[in-house]
Structure formats: C-alpha cells, structure tokens
Image 1: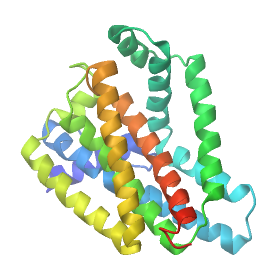
Image 2: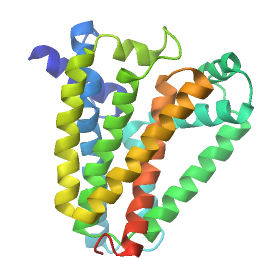
Image 3: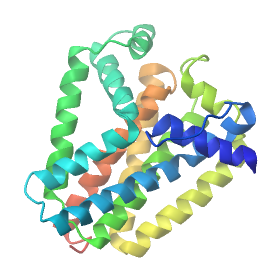
Image 4: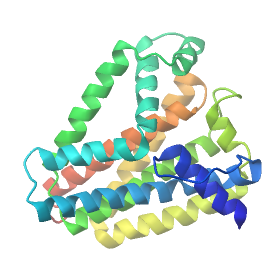
Length: 260
C-alpha cells in the first residue's frame, strides 16, 4: 500500500505542479506511478470544471473564459506535456533519419518548428474551447476524457517498444508488469469509458472511437518515425489527445450526437 501511495506522489510530482512530499524513486514505487496518470487527468479536468463555474459566477465571458481553459492545464502541469509536443514537432519537421530525430528529441533548445507548432496548438485549443457549448454534460465528458487521454499516454509508454533504453519513459515503464498493466488498462477504460457513455451514449461512442483512431495513428507514427516511444512522444500523444477530445465534442454537438 505504501508503494501505491509513493507511486501517486511521484506521478503528481512529475506530471503536475501540486506540492508533494519527497519520496524515493524506487522500482516498487515507480511500478504504480504511470497507473496514477488518469488520476492526474481527473484533477486537471476538475480544475477546468471549477474555472468554468467560477467564470459563470463572476460574469467572466468572451475571450477570457476560453483563455483560462487553455492556460489552466499549462499552469497545472508546468507544461511538461507541451514540452514533449514541441520536441516531437521539431523532430517530425526535420525529415531527418531516425537517429537524428531521436537526437532532436533530447535537445533542450527550441527550434523554429516547435515554436510554430506551439503557436498553432494554443490557437486551435482556444478556438475549440470557444466553439464548445459548455454544460454539465460536456464538462463531465471533458473531465473523463482528460483522464482517458492521460491513460493513453501512460499505456503507450508501458506497452509499446521503447525508442531508446536510457530515456525517462523507460525509467517509468521498466518496473511495470505487462500482465498487471492489461488488467489496469481494461479496468480504467471500462470506468472512464462507462462514464462517457453515461454522459451521452452516442457522444461517448463517438469520443471513444475518435480517441481509438488517434491511438492507432500514434502507434504507426512512433514506430515508423522513431522506432518506438519516448517520454516526449507520450507528451505529444497527451496534447494531441486533448485537442482531439475537444474537436470530437465540438463536432459531436454540431452533428447532434451530443446534446448541448
């Protein structure tokens, strides 16, 4: 039980800016760290819901409401997933060989394509939040979907081949049992997917199908372009999953699959 708690502390210390006590990064504790990522996502989604409610109470609307919804995840995570997104954008835009792309992922400097990708990401994120008709139903789906996207990032690190043996992703994924991971993956998917279906049957199926397609596309990209996954690529998946979730919700509302 103590290792589970230590794993939760490691997950929040690594993937959020919430104050956490210091714990040793031992293999028994790291075994549970990635499993806690959906919980990190649930907290993030809950903060988004709280900001929406506070904005309504305070009469904040117009551009400020979606701006807060864009900036809050950055403040909460410290931009760790955006860092991976930017590094991956740079590597993909280089059109170099696999070894050079992996070197770009490790480079701490930001390239031109990373800056361009970040600007496009933030603009699209803001536009999708502005286009989404917010309600308890849609925000409930955002909370659950955010947790599901974090689970996708964690599962990719555990289950897919690693692009290099010495990366941070390998540090987190190495102690995890594959058999136990499948049990965790199935249970988490059932809980979060069931929650999405409870919010909206058609909308839940729509979101699950869309995120499933993203996972397949990500697997193909990671294996073809990099020979496996890394922590940066997992961050790219999390950020693209967030955008995809919002896009699916917006289109679902337009098609009438999700009630406004």
